[in-house]
Length: 204
Picture 1 (cartoon, rainbow, N blue to C red):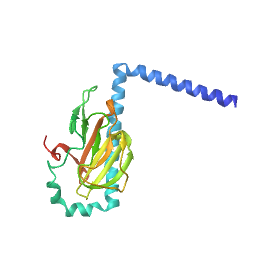
Picture 2 (cartoon, helix red, strand yellow):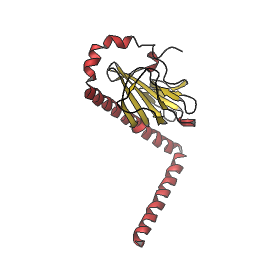
Picture 3 (cartoon, rainbow, N blue to C red):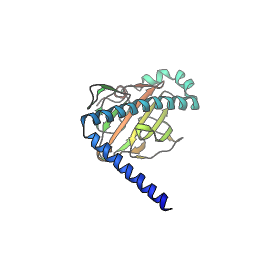
């Protein structure tokens, strides 16, 4: 018992030391670069995983057949969807300059800075097909809008809906956190291809 206790204390001390070393490294330019590269890789891996997840959701709900029959309906939603939350766009769709690296980072969606604990609303009627933690997106919701398109809401504070639930346009589906966590990540995907959400949302 004493031996196990000593081993546990040694592990705790080692973890503390590693954490201190990591914090010291992050204070240096090289350390920030390493962390930034790791963050970019995590984001890219997460985007690929999300693509795969929505493919599986489409197959499970046989959405592909409905998408084919409802192609014309998707054009009616361009510049016609309500915003999921009021706020300011702080990350654009497409290429974005990384703050710590001399490189561009591709974003499949936008980020909207909102007030603390803001309510997130569904942009259209549909069915909630995913809720939960998902890689770099944190707490996330995916809504299938009758097979025409999918909307993705990430970096949520609290989720207010459950999988399989039908939602109407403008329905409350989640809440954001506060401070740095009061930012919504939002995607629109048609045929599981990410599109610029701003082209789908009402012009402000």
